[in-house]
View 1: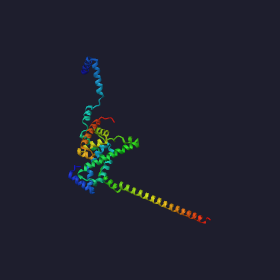
View 2: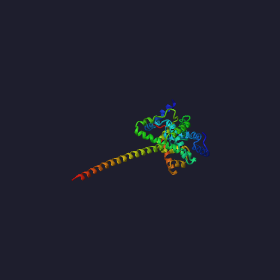
View 3: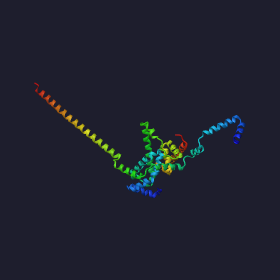
View 4: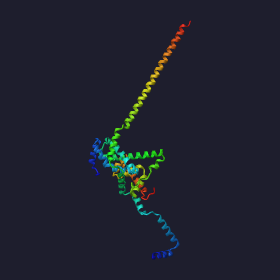
Length: 182
Length: 136
């Protein structure tokens, strides 16, 4: 799908806020691949992608009328995506406390063909070693969010974002070994 | 054959110490995996933008066709369900109603018991007065 201009996006968001189903569908179609990529970077599991992306967009539709500035739709959507993924990871962590064998089931390797290159596998492995907050930071940068936007999404300062991003990149490089041993 | 002969000549002319170092170097380099230099360079530079694009493409491929339709359908179904706040309000109202009923019954029972006790005391007082008046 072609990238939408800021004016067209604001118009689309306004129509979606009024309950226009075509506009809501267009918003989902425009952002589904980017949100899916973000979810994959956050969870490192391709089998969570559809389910979590669906959760993000359901939350989007239900909360869209509360969005005050349609121009800030993208930042708002990725904040929803980040919070949904972090909630999922927390739930997973809690489940591991109560179901000690759950971890073994959750760590079943990706099905063959899901990850096709060594470098992609290495990136997935490296991301999995980082804290969810750092993964979110790196994924937001890859989504083209500016430092100011990321600071707004994470409710922190631009200086803090820069410092955390520097550390997150260093950690990613440390763990990014294409011939890693799992 | 000629190279082997040269190698043998070099080996014969090398000191035993140098031979040992050469053997150690050969053994050490055999331990390195193939593509070692590429691996180091990749690890130093970090993932290239193309790898991030691949990650996005893999994620996008995991969305089954008709994703938007399914989301809209699920959102509609979720909208038909009572919200958490309304469920909480209903629970609170039910709890308040039950508490009110329990308090009402408790107070009524207390009042009935008081009335019964008072009537019994009045009977006792009347009986005592009667005994007093009948005493010579």
